Length: 375
Image 1 (cartoon, one colour):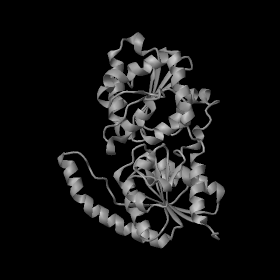
Image 2 (cartoon, one colour):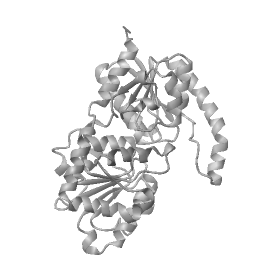
Image 3 (cartoon, helix red, strand yellow):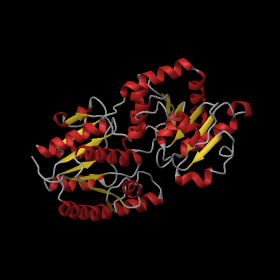
């Protein structure tokens, strides 16, 4: 048994889907071993450099960037820099791992996760992959060969990973969303909504989603005044889009509340009668726990098209409604309206998605981490 404080490194980020699970895992470990020393490694200029310190943890940034799949001149220029950024980040990751001497490195995905996890494995440090999606990316599939354990959120992941390393834990989520039963009134008040209207919460994730923003703006303005005023809209548009969207015709409607980012997502979920969102792994895990009917619009701009696979896994069992990204302008709002106008459908979606929630995922992953270290 290890004596003294544990030393645990976590790496991942770029989006909330990678950052918030890492923070949730650290919080769960700290509950069991309060003296643990943590170090996060993320990507410079990405959201983890702000969110992780806000949660009370130290973080170091790498200059790593993602490989761009587009064919534009900007993408080409960034891709030419990719090998050099990767080399620099790998060398820095090696120094960080050697200096910190972690008992284990936990990777939740994102730009920084690949080089840090690979370096840790080369140096003989135990590694744990936390795979959020039903279809893993290439990096995690490669890393899995030398990983100690792989914590997953979906069944039948043995087709991608070594079956003897798998632990079915679910995806860790922010703890404040686990019980929303008495928060609806607080949510209505916090966002200054009308308690007499049903609420549609539209969120493109931590960074926002242009398709969802456009579909809301154009979709609302196509409706007559009586139709669009039946419901109210809580709209997280993303910081990148806020300046251009806050003066749009839709944002100026009295029943629309636009925000760049929702810090109290628990109150947003509590106030919502239906959620319209992308199909990222963290969002889906949260929707399963809150049990709210949802319209999913998978992003086509992600590796391996994993959001479509996430959404399909729910729609096939009647746990969510799905709209293609290319059809969002025509179908996104009508799908949400249909749910709100059909109590039987709304009830069915809630009943089918709720059993998929894993409220103890962070604690289960913490147990696996501690088991590996003690072993």
